[in-house]
Each structure stands twice: as C-alpha cells, then as structure tokens.
Length: 205
Image (cartoon, rainbow, N blue to C red; front, side):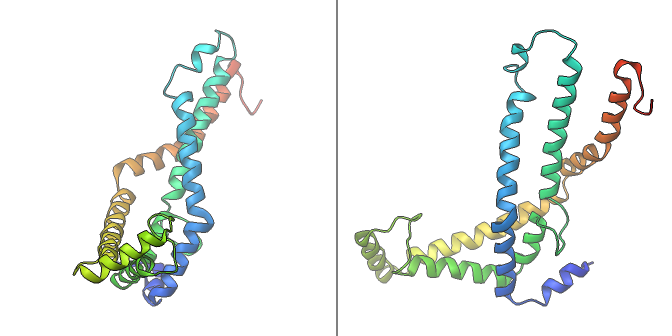
C-alpha cells in the first residue's frame, strides 16, 4: 500500500522528481554521508583499536572514558539512522531520494542526461578531463561503432540506478538497520542508568 508521499510523487513529472532528488543530494545527503564516514573512521581508533586506550594509564577517569566511547558510538548510530529515515517530503534521507527516482521514466531521463553529457562536444568528459584529441577520437568512434561509447555509458548508468534502488530498498528493511534503530532508542535509558550508578548517587539527588 502506497503512502501519501508516494502518491504525491507519482503525480510529478520526471524532470521535477529529478530536480528534487538532486537538490536533496547536493544540499544535505552527500554532506551527511561524509560526516558518517568521518565518524566511522574516528571510531576505528576509539572503539576497535587499542592505539588510544594503551596511551591512557589506569585511573579513576576510566568511567568517564567509557561514557565518552558509548556516546560517540551512539552518535554514529544516530547519524546512520537519520540517513535511512523513511521517505517524507521534509526528510533529507536516502529513502526519500529513492522514492523520487524509482520510476522507469525518471531512470530513462537520467540515463538520457548521461548520454547527452558524453555526446556533447562542449562539456568535459572522461571524469572531467577535456582534451580536443580525445574528444575527436570519441566522436569518430561514435560515428563508426553501432554501439557507441556514449550509449554504453548510458546503459551502465541505467543499470547502476536500478541496482542502487534495489540495494537501498533492501537496506531499508534489513535486520541490521532495525537493530541499529533499536539500539539508538534504548541507549539513552542505559546511559542514564550508568550515570545514576556513578559513585552510588542518583541524578535526582
């Protein structure tokens, strides 16, 4: 059964859906993914390595360190879950982008954009490198070969988009993501109990 958001998206034309998906990616999601990657890279040292722990001597500050580690891990879980929030107009999440692009007409339009970008003589190609000799050679091959280079790239883009949608939908309903959500929800309770047990005092005292 479709949600109200999915029903509203279905009424939009392909160009509008693409514009909104690109805006979400550019304005918020790409930066959020970078932040999540940075956090995970830092956690490799904090949580999964003895490199930092071995530099800290035995002391009464161990509990503070443990709370810091727990908080960092919880923040990483929060950032991950936010990226995978359910699709809604006011949510910059991967699932929202998927809803915008998961349509044959939208994927065809995106593949066509890819095709035009590779065929255009005025736009940089080959990952941003523009060379007149390379450009001329590509044009020559495009004219000679039945399956042109640009068309092959467009087909690759279409397959990649279908695969990305499939993977994103699998992750959205996966047990792993569900467990991360559950841990995110229960951690504040565990954190409060740990603080209340520090020194045998209660936060309400």
